[in-house]
Amino acid sequence: MKSLSENAALIIIDVQKAFYDSSWGRRNNPDAEKNIVKIMDYWRATSRPIFHIQHVSRTNENSLFHISKPTHEFKEMIQILDGEPIIQKTVNSSFIGTDLESRLRSKGIESVIIVGLTTNHCVETTTRMAGNLGFNTYLVSDATATFDRIGPDGKTYLAEDIHQMTMVNLNEEFATIIDTNSLIELS
Image (cartoon, rainbow, N blue to C red):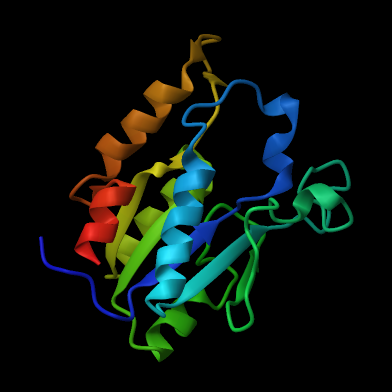
């Protein structure tokens, strides 16, 4: 695996207070945010670009992501620095209805590193699109997490299994799956 370019962009997806809410249920990977911060700090130390993605609802006032609720704000460990853009989205993909792609292209960015919440929703959708758009895409497996889900069959599927299946589905077709320490070594 070759080393990452000096302008490889870190895309941090939806690390928001809404995911503290107990309604989500049981979650995997309790260290995801710690790993996200480790990568974010390294990206800052190496002066690489960081994009913060924030899911917002403007229409559903009951949503934890509604713009009027404090739960739509970033979790405390995500401190946005001057010059780090916040891109608000209203759907699962960070590319749909935003200027993320044009921002990346205007800076000549070819490689993106994706971290955040939740693995099988916004992280997966953004990763698939990044790969389809031709970006050299890395998904950091231990810097994302998800929750148990109930399937259409009424069965509960464990967060660990959902997380792993997302990695399997994306591996080598849409992204390179990597962990935090390996990413930093590659950088």
